[in-house]
Amino acid sequence: MIAFRIKLNGRKVSTAGLPGFHVVSAIATSVLRRPDIVGKVRRRRSQEPELKFELGGLRTSADGAREHVSWTNVHALKAGDKLLLEIVDTENADEPLHRSRTEALTIEAAERNQLRHLLKKYGPAVTERGGRHNEALRTSRRQVHR
Image (cartoon, rainbow, N blue to C red):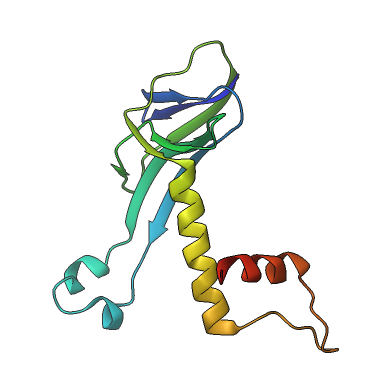
């Protein structure tokens, strides 16, 4: 399987990979917030960039459930840190530290609730010419309002 081998300042963080259909991502983030938006409590912290690294993924099971996984806790970074991401083809990846499974029926219920909300908010989708541009949305709307 293809996996990401991550090192931070020369030390191995993890080798992240999943068998089958999946998403694996390594994300380094820098955030510098505007002091007027952050508020008085965090104003001092807002002067410095928030630097962090996350290594996670998503796998869909044969039964339709989704499993979110993470190989790291969020790593705080600082200027001068060196992150190395090596793409490897390996038989063995490290086990994720965290797993969170969402059952297929829960996902479907959440999607239906979101669809109801969007239909209520925006109504049926109509093109500039007055015709419907999304037949699937029209079909779904009839099913939702049963």
